[in-house]
Image (cartoon, rainbow, N blue to C red; front, side):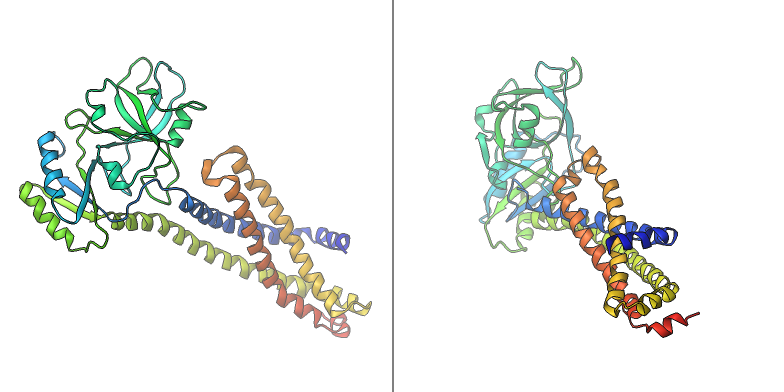
Length: 400
C-alpha cells in the first residue's frame, strides 16, 4: 500500500508540489508562533530573583535634568521622612525600578586579563534595596557599612554572571574591571552572589547582572528612584498620603508614584501584545492555507474520478477509497514537514537565535506544529475523501 501511494504521489509530482509548498508554509507559520509561545512559557517558569509584591516606586524629578548631584542629607531626609509613614516597612534607592524599560550595560573582564569580555547589565543600588525586593543571597552578603571606604567598588552579582566571569571558580572575593585594553575605568570586588535576577520581568531572558553599591556623590549618577516595601493590603489611596509627605520634604520637586504591580502589568502587556498580534496574523494565514489546501484536494479528487471508478469496478470498497485519499494527504504532509524540519533544525544547531530557540523549545514547537498540520490535513481531506468514496463505479466510469 505504501509503495503504491508513493508511486501515485510521484506520478502527480507537479500537482503535488504546490500542495507540499502550502503545507510547508503552514508548518513554518505554526512553528514560529508555537516557538514564540513556548519560549515565553519557559521564561515564565524560571526564577525571577525578586519579589515585587507590595512594592511601590517613586521617581524623584528635581527638574535639573540630573545635572545637580544629591548629597547624603537629601537621601537621608527622603529615607527618614517616607519611613515614618505607618504603611512603609523598608526603603531603598536604585538607578531605576524593576520592570522599567531602562537598561545600563557594559563589557566587563577579569582583573589583570585583557582577553574575554562579558556583556553585563548593571544597576546602582543602595544598602536597603535587598530588603525591599526580598533578594536572597546564595553566597556572601549584601552591601553594608562594612564597604565604606573600600578601594574597589563592592558588587553583588547573579549566578549566571559568576559562571560567565569565573567559570569553575568561587566568585566571592574575586575582582573584575570595566574598560578596554590597558584603560580601566572601574575595579569591582564581589561581596555577594544572588541566584537570579531578571530586572525586566518574567518574560525577559536571563542575563548577566551586577548590582553596584550606590554611595551619594561617588557614582556616575544619582539613584533617583526610591523603592518602598509597604504592608500587605495597603490601598491605592496611599499614593495621595505618600505624595503629601514627599512634598513636605521637598515641595519644589515632583514625584511619579506607582505600584510595582502596575509597572509589571505594563511590561507584560508590551511583551504579550506582539505575540497576540502574530498569533492573529498566523491564524488568518493558516485559514487561507486551509482554504487553498481544501480547494486543491477537491480539484484533485474531481480529476481522478475515472481512476476512482476503475478501482471501484475492480472491487475496492468505499472505505478503501476514503483511506487512500486521506493517506495520500498525510504522506504529502509528512514530506512537507520533513523538509521544513530539515531547514528549521539549522537554527538551534547553529545557535542563530541563541537561547530563544533552544532544543527544548524547538522540540516542543515541532511536535505541536506537526499535530496542528496533521489535524489540518485530516480536516481538509475528510470531505473530498468522503465524496470520492460515495461515487458508484458506473457513475465514475461514465464521468466526462
